[in-house]
Length: 519
Image 1 (cartoon, one colour):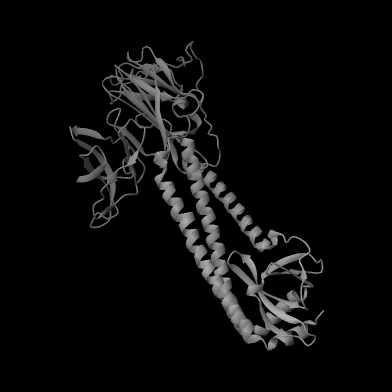
Image 2 (image 1 turned 120 degrees about the vertical axis):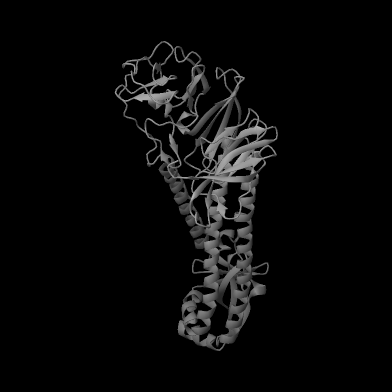
C-alpha cells in the first residue's frame, strides 16, 4: 500500500491535468443542475399550478377537491425542497472549483486517504468497480470517463474518474490501478450507483417538511376559524333542555313583556337562555323551540372573528308573520330546518343532511315567492385552506330538501347570493364565481377593477348585500373596493356594479358611500 506522502508527491506534477479534468466535471455538473432547476420549476410549480387551477371546477366531489389541493401543496413542498437541494449543489459546485484552484495541495491531502482506502479494482462491461478492504465493490466508474494521470515508481497507474452522485452530477474519484483489473466477481448493487447519504438526506428533508406543513395547516386552520388550537368548542349555557314529543325545546322562562323598535325581531332572553320572536314591535312574543347553541353549530365565525352571543349570521333565519324559519343542528351532526307559517304558534322541522354539522362554517338560505328556496353551507377541513360548498334546493318552503351538488372554493366563502333557483353567486375576499345551472358547476366571473382601486381589506361581496335583477338583462350588486390614490387613499368604498351578461362580467357603475370597518 502506497504511503500518503509519497502519493501526494506523485500527483504534484499532475496538477494541470487534474485541474482541467475537475473543470470539465464541474461544467457537466453545472449544465445538469441548471436542467434540473428548469425541470423542477416547470413540473412542481408550473404544471402543478396549471392542474390545480384548471381542475377544481371539473371535480364535483368535495373530497376529490380536498385531495387535489393536498396534492398541490405536496407538489409545492417537494418543489421547494428540490430547489433548495439543487441550489446547494450549485453553490458547492462553483465554490468547490474555486477552492480547489487556490488550495490544490490541501485537496490532495484530503483525497489521499480516500484513494488509498481503495484496495481492489474490478472491471466489467466498460466500467471499473472500486472496493475497500471488504472486497465488496461500492463505486462504479465509466472507463471512458477515466484519465490516467501518472505512473508511480513501482509501475502502478494513478487514475482519476467521475463518481456519480445523481444522474448527470458527479465528483472526482482517484484510484491506483496495478496491472489488469480482475473481472467483477459479483453483481454490483444499483444502490451504490449514487450517493446513498444524499438520497437519505433528501428523503429526510422531505419528511420533515411535510410534517411541518401538516402541523401548520392544522394549527392555522383552527386559529383562523376557531380562534384556538382546540378542536372542540364548548358552550356555557344554563337553559334547561326539556323537549316535547317532536324533539323541540319547551318553554321554561317567562315571555318577554317589553316593546322594541324593530318590527320583526329575534330576541335572546339571557335570564332563561331562551329565544323569542316578535312581528309587531314586541306587542306579542312567540317562543322559539330552539336552544341558542343549536343555531351556533359547527364554527360560528366570519373571517373577522367569532360572532358574539346574541348576534347571528345573516340569512341563517328569517322572521315574518307568514313564514319564519331557522337553520340549526340539535346534535352538532345533522343539519335541520325549522319553520312556522302561523307566526310561531306551531313549528315544523325537516332534515337537510345527516352528518356535515361539525365542519360547517358559513351557512345561508334564501326563498322565492313560489315557495322554492336554496340552502347553502361551507364545510372546512383542518387539512386544507379551501372550503367545500354544499347546495340544497326545496320547492315546498323547506319541508323537503334535495342536494344539488358540491364543489370546492379555493378560499373561505364570504357570501352566497341566488337571484333565482338557477342563477347564483359565491364570493371570497377577492374572487367571484357564478353558476347558471343550479350549482352543478361554477365559473369565475370577471370583475373589472378600475384604475385607482383594488380588492382586499374587506369582503369583495359582503353580506347582507345581494345580487338583484333590476331589469330583464341587468343584474346589480355592491362590491367593496379599496381606494389607492387621491384624498381618500386607504379608505374602503361600496361600489355599485352591474352585469348585462348574467353575471359573467361586472363593471363599475358608480362609487357609493365609504365603508367603515365596523359595517
